[in-house]
Length: 97
Image 1 (cartoon, rainbow, N blue to C red):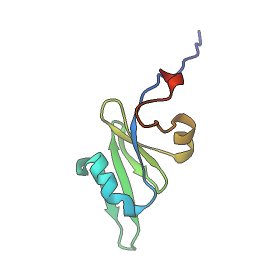
Image 2: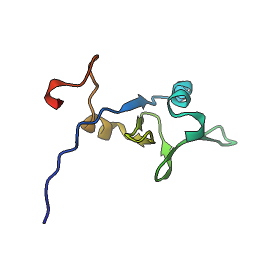
Image 3: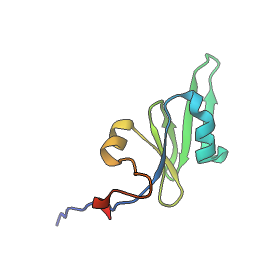
Image 4: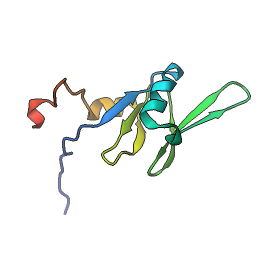
């Protein structure tokens, strides 16, 4: 039988990786052991985050989420914006309490 479920309200930390100028923020957030940068001879760079499922590529505009167990993973902006909303200072929205 199929059931419907509602995602539990969990507050997560996330970093919006808008461009490579945010690399220091990303390294401080994830730690250097969780980030892999591949430099190509033609000047292109690829960025990967170590996740529980393996290395996942990060593109400019992606959000990097710190999960409930301290793991990191990238999320495309459209999915992030449909799934999460910013916490107001001092706590979460009252409808989630």
